[in-house]
Length: 475
Image: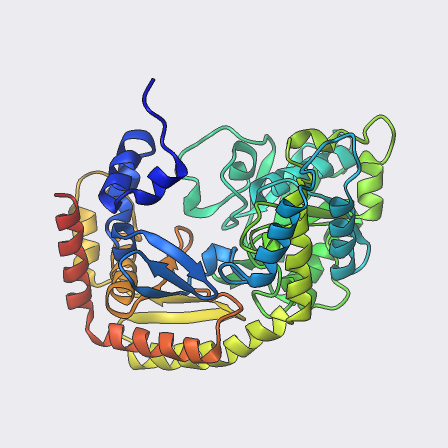
């Protein structure tokens, strides 16, 4: 047998050794992709608040927000303390035949934060599991008598077989099998939803739609639903007895300026809401779907079905994960994360709009809410021509030029200014500005200054440098 590595061995690995192990045991193409950027050629040593500290001594301002995970920032001291105490007291993690005080308290906290009768929780591990649990609940609510589920054309709900079949846009470029009966509507277009519902009726006029799932704020495209659209969905789903699911896995816990995006509209309550990412305080892999009491009770609240939903994950209600999420919610409420997001928006919004005007040749536009914004960059005609003439996959990617420009800006921000950002693989591939909610307005000002200076260096220099470093990383 090959000699096993210890924790100490892992911590002594050089970046080259890590790359080699990834190539051999993880995915060599992932190494080729990630080493295109400066952060793919370094190792992080530790992280605190809004900063990552690399092994070579760099202090990097993390404006990825952990892709939605780090509203609390890296290693929030209260989160660390809760986990330390749990370990020191040797608390039991999970056992399905013991009741858990942590699961009970966490479910109570979710009901306390959410509006209306969104009271009944289930707690798996990932956002995709929460989505699939919500869909499973909706199907069971109708006792299998309906077979159609509606999803939007741009939605992102995960990459499992089930949740992946509910994901739209460019995320679905390979046809994996998925949930049967998936029908698509146009995001934000109520008439499109109505047509999809009408198309599902049988000969007696009965609806076949058991659920509709939508992101009120689409974090992967930086688009959001109007209040009119969301209230129209609520009215339609109530009339047709369709289970309305709001996916707030990314946008929950204050990110866009309200605790959940849909809560900016008083009285608007879905049948189910899903959450994950910052729900775990940046340390816990935990998610939830929370259902309205009558929906949940009809589906599962009987002796025959009471354990039916709990078979979806071994780690349901895992003790340390629930304890962490309890503290994460308390922090979000006590430190008023929605107000923090609005304070960051007051700097980010005007600053990004100013940069867009000053660099209109490079910036097609900016939009966002709270501490989640997208910068949409233009692609020069020359890059688009290269993509059209190139063999293989490049010619099929209409966003090739935009991706190259966006990657060039991300790389320059990191290399020159120690600022970490990312771009999405959906929609128009915006550069995402998503600082953790522990970031300060001063740190946002610093980011804006660095973005301005980066764009001022010009598209030709940015792209040439990025492509040169990309080529050198392959050798």
